[in-house]
Image (tube, rainbow, N blue to C red; front, side, top):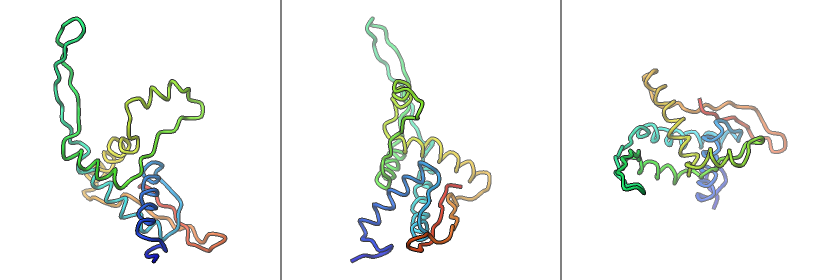
Length: 168
């Protein structure tokens, strides 16, 4: 039995997951007005969760012995348990998009650029989007309002109201 948006719960969750991933990756998508209105709170909650924990990292010093027997101290930065839990919760709500090779980029350059990145969308969310909105919230003294919906009018063919949803 179809529910909201004429879809079953599983279909609707899959659609929201796909559209939220695309919106966070590209910053702007075109969809119907009803879908945009369903997507807006879904994405805002994800961004809010990322903002709360994006800067919680733990530095650990690791002492290793190299081939010559010398002790070498290295520092590694890992997510704190709270950030890791939030990252996993967000990963459950998004689809993992992969980095795409640029048209004029060499394969070796692409591999070098993406060598250490396992989940590009998560890296973008925690390293670019969350710090940007955290700074914005600090300056304006308010949270939320991360997305904006523009209505475009009716679509030819089925007369559905089209809208653009974008990150502000």
